Image 1 (cartoon, helix red, strand yellow):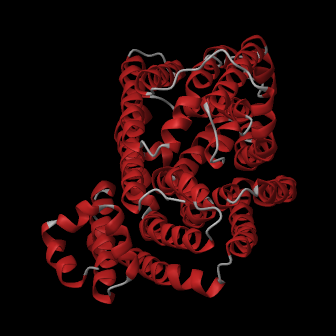
Image 2 (tube, rainbow, N blue to C red):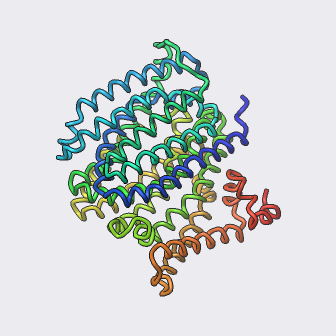
Image 3 (cartoon, rainbow, N blue to C red):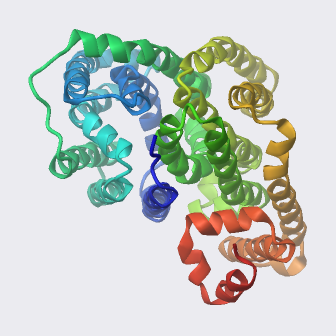
Length: 497
């Protein structure tokens, strides 16, 4: 079998990374404007509704999009069958949330959530009409097109939300921004994709894809509950203000997953699926992807933990000071999850989604219990500490199954990631020490953040250059523009592969 070339995979990873990086930069810079125009309560209300909207969104796809990518023998009949199934479920979910919006308001004792739910329900229709086109472009490694569409849709969201926030629309600015983002994305995918559905629904295609998709479908809601049970409990027990503070820290913790891990995971899944019967190539793809992601995500997360105070207060203001201790812990979770998030991709690409399902069946109820105990013992911070411990413990178990499936030795895994971990933790330790220096403490928070971030970046890159570690070269190969930077060009010419 002829595999997709490494250059095409690398190009796909680069465009996926540029898309997520661009979205993060756009979201970070323009999000600051929204954070200063809106109140934590507005973001908290949005998060409350999205717990249920997001959960239903997982159910809508039924795992068929993943099945289309994993299966190497699909045709127009298969794609059309999934398209019409998605459209049908999209209409059903829209009706359920539109006419049942009062239920969410009653759950949180907040009737203002009713109107938010009605408006946000329309996104089920937009997603249903464009998900197959998105899947086909992914399967074809057309990540450049997907990047342009994704970035443009994100800009549309802020172009709508910011003026409405200035005009005093409050939380509805976020709602309308999200609606226009999904609408513009759906329209663009229809224009870019050559594939259009035909009026066919094949029972044979449905059964073929169902055998794989059912495990992804059952796993998705469990995983979603796992990721959002904290949001639900804090909103219910502590109110929207506390949830807004926690959500800001949690979203920052997700930075390496959204911006780095997901960039390469989107490309890794079709590549691993293509090589699912070739263990040697699969091992190479997984281990190198782990090393590249760790090289980028570990220093960011350990660094954010070290500079949490100037990061939060300097950027978002004193109103968000309660986020600092939460972020200091959750940032460490983000470093671990940036690697753990590849586990499910590995299971699915190998045609073994049931492993992820069985793990979620065990860990989801345990997480609910641990969150409850954590809250009872020490409130919000108790939940944070319990969540950190549980994530690391479950991650070790999940990686163990992945290593067995791909015949990867634990010693090899640590050999790939160990240097990056040591350099990242060492850098964070030095940055934290530097933050106590009198000349740093006397600076405004935003200047503290700039100085400490620059100091950490120089330490980290210098350590990799001096030690000539492979992770630095792997990362540069994924993003070739790094090799052309004036200060690094000579280095790669002398020591590069």
